[in-house]
Image 1 (cartoon, rainbow, N blue to C red):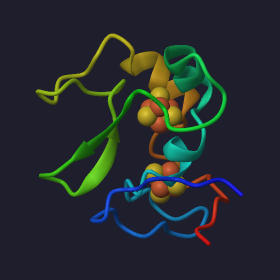
Image 2 (image 1 turned 180 degrees about the vertical axis):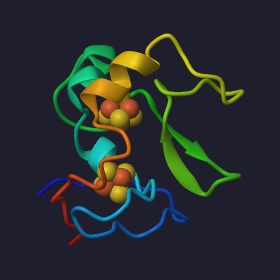
Image 3 (image 1 turned 90 degrees about the horizontal axis):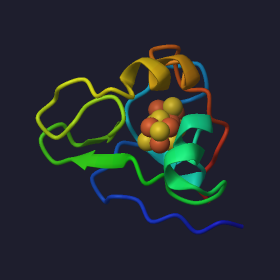
Image 4 (image 1 turned 180 degrees about the horizontal axis):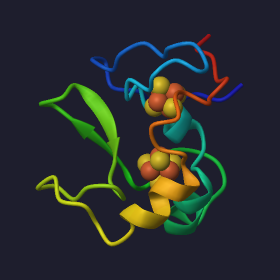
Length: 94
Ligand code: SF4
Ligand code: SF4
C-alpha cells in the first residue's frame, strides 16, 4: 500500500480513458518517464507537479511555468505523457 498526500480540493479521479481532470493521482504516485528524469526517482510524487488554487487542480510544471507560459520542457513532456489522450492511470484510492 502506498500513502499519497493529495490536496483536499483535488477533484476525484475519473475512470481510465475519460478526460484528465488534474486530480494528480498518477503524478503523486509515481513520475512519468520525463518526470523520473527531473525528479531523479521512480516512486512517489513528481517534483514537477504543481497545485493551482485558481484552477483547483494539479498541473504539470514542465508544461507551463508559474506565469502560464510553455516551458522548454513542454515539447518533450507532451510527447512522453500523451497529453490530451485521457486518463491512463489505473490507480485507485482506498
Ligand atoms: S491522468 Fe488521470 S490520474 Fe493523472 S491527473 Fe489526469 S485524471 Fe488524474
Ligand atoms: S506529467 Fe508532469 S508532473 Fe506528472 S509525472 Fe510527468 S513530469 Fe511529473
